[in-house]
Length: 328
Image 1 (cartoon, rainbow, N blue to C red):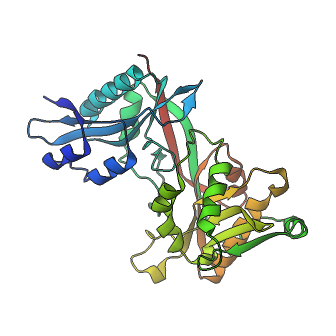
Image 2 (tube, rainbow, N blue to C red):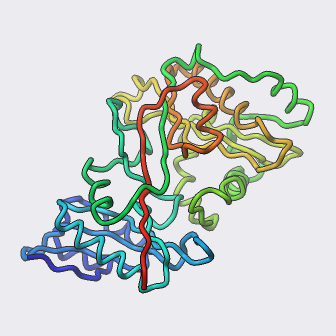
C-alpha cells in the first residue's frame, strides 16, 4: 500500500529517496507544490514537483509543469501523475506538461530514442521507462528535440558564402569572451538570451541574478575561445556557448568533443546568418584547441539550428516533452 503526501523540501530529510535528489534544489526552484508516494517504510516510490503560478501560458491560461520526476514503477507513477494532474487542474491550468522543472532554463525533456552514443555534458538523462509512465497516464508527445554529432569538425564545416563580408561591412565583430575587460559581458549574454528565446516554446523569463547563479561560473570556467560574443556598435548582439564534453573522458586531456549548447542572436533581420558565422568560428577555435568532434545539443526539430546542424552532423539522440489536458 502506498500513501501520497504533499511535501515541503525539509520533509525529505525524514524519508529515504532512492534517487538521491538534493532537497536544496527543491527549495531553490520554487515549485508551488511537491508530492511524494511513500511506502510503509517511508521510502519514496515516486515524487514530483509542480508549478502553475510562473509558467508559460496557453490560450492566455497557465500551463502546469511537472518536474523533479522520479518513479520506481508503473503503479507508483500512475498514482503520482494522476494526483499531480488533478492538483494542476484545480489551480486553473489547461495543460499539464512534463518533464519540466518549472522553466526551460532548467532541466526538461525525456530521452525517447537513446541510440548507442554515451551521455554528454549538460544532457538530461532518465531511465528508459519514464516516458511510458507519462504515456500510460494519458500524456502524448508535445514537442520533439534532437542532438546530432559532427564526427570530424576539421573537415565537416558549414558553408558561409558571403557572411564574413556581410558582417564585416555591417561592423559586427566576433570575439572570444573576455571577463576581465570593461563592462559585464554576462549582462549582455543574459539580455540576448532573453530576447532571442522570448518566442520559444514554453519560455518564461528569469532575473539576471538567477541567471548568474545558474550559468555564470560555468561560462567563466570554459576556455574563452569556446564562448564567442558578437558585438555591433559596442553592444552584444549574439553569443555561442560550446563547453567541452566533460563526461567524455576521465582525463580532461583526453576529451575530444565540444557541446554546442547555446547559440543566440538578437531577432533582427540584419543579423540573419550570424549564428552560422559564430558556429564556424567556434568550431575553428575548437580544432585549434585540439578537439575533434562536436555535438549539436538539444535542438527543437523545427528550429533553424536543426536545419543548420543537418549540413554537417547526424542525429544521435531524440527527446520528447509530453502534455495532457487537465480540467478543474
